Image (cartoon, rainbow, N blue to C red):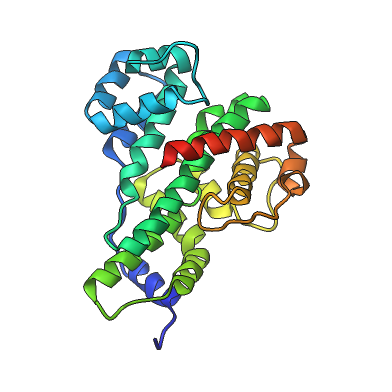
Length: 277
């Protein structure tokens, strides 16, 4: 093709013609409740009950090895009692987004599923790690920051899916698709989050999670970067990196995470991967 796939996708996004994935309406309302702090269990139950799929997914997470207790959680109210209202709301906003990871092309859908594996792993892993290494000031944001950090990859994939549907002759190779995703996902992930009207804390993570030079005082960014690397080391996502030694990463060292905790994180991520399937 005369132009690179990266240029074609960038032009589609910047022209305003691209279909923008929707931030789930229930997730929007739940995020509003989290931000305001003015909600009760009944309001959360009402929002979650609108979507049986969301209710089931939230209960599945609440009963997973991440959060499970001796007794099985059967209702959203039980989940709130086990997890706390804020954490339960945060998880509901996370699992509500799974519906966004759908494309029409079968090959691209496999890639989209890999993106969801990575997103959910980073969401649950970031939430777990923030609590495990005792950084309470970021616990309320960690799951959503982990979920959204690579959302620009989803946007690029959706644009390519739409281009393929519009022109049967448009059949880029997987290598070209991966190249476009790598080149565009941070810049246009930022574009997407601003279109969704999400807080700047999340926009910052999306924009800077691959920067070579990063702020070691930005604890939320460090946690997401560590978990992102851990997921890649385990092969969860589009960028497997099995040779990565997490303990040697600058982020893990900046956070002074013991190797035992990093090993625990990998176990937690393997459990999260089961939830993504």
